[in-house]
Image 1 (spheres, helix red, strand yellow):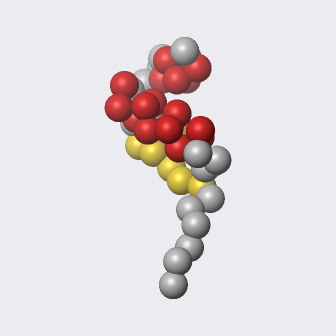
Image 2 (tube, one colour):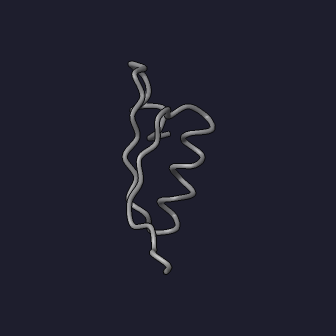
Length: 46
């Protein structure tokens, strides 16, 4: 049985997490990123 992934969550939005988030979004997957850093949101938007 095969299921397509439609959404996922990532813990950490640094360089590697941000890269994975971008790759997943570009492939049509909804991504939620959790990162305790105060600058994580700004970093991911860059």
